[in-house]
Length: 366
Image 1 (tube, rainbow, N blue to C red):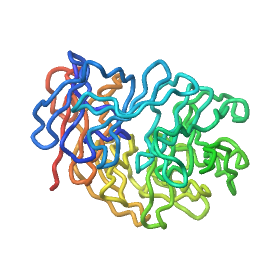
Image 2 (spheres, one colour):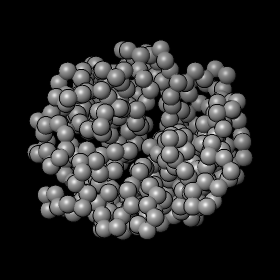
Image 3 (cartoon, one colour):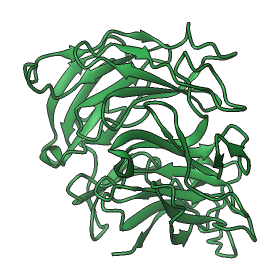
């Protein structure tokens, strides 16, 4: 049994912080808690047919979930009033929400595994407002990828909405430009491909990263970046004048790489989250167990300025072997002062007696 959040790049708190959503293997399948006391508030609405959903990031829509169902519908749904507030019929059924909407909740990219499309959910001048339909043309992400295998893991719009990133199996990342007028997406050529990484520069491929999240970097004029686990096999090596650590940041505009951690005696990072929207400039990282190494089984925050500054929060104490739902997937609250993760509390002598009793834990640094 488990009662835990979804994933590290999915903010569990509503925009106003009053609600916290958890998944539940019992009944109901999801539950909303009070965002401060963590007491149950409500279950899902009976008319909510979401297959996959995310909190709307805007305070103006704080209790609405951006949702897709299995039949090609995108919607906004208020979980307090049980009301569908906006609705779009997509060009094709999609396989879920692979990443996140843009930071303002306006844009989202959705995929069926072979094609993706960009949706403007909240058109602004000079465009007519909703319900004006602004959906970009479908983009084939398979035929021109150029990799030995072009199966897709996920597709997501960037934090600003200027780019789309496609993650192919193996954590090979490709950047597309989004035309602000037509919402058409085209591969963005990069200056170079780094050693041991995949794809070609002309096709828009950047440094391979695992378990990533996207954000705007306040130390670089709010450029769109993606932060993740180093995946080109260069950890501990010099690449383009950079000593590559376990956590790497890549600028989407030109693929520039910044190492955020020092590889010396570093445990291996697992999942990265930048859901701390109201505390820009930090990425939160959960690490694999590695006794004797720095950040062994820890949750830390690393600064996006490349200084190597780190904040240390907690140990996950979760035993994850052959158990996806046991993985910590640490994610900060919007203000970055609380961090939530999943754990069976079995590691490092902390055993609960059952690996499959997976619960939600929160460290509060307020």
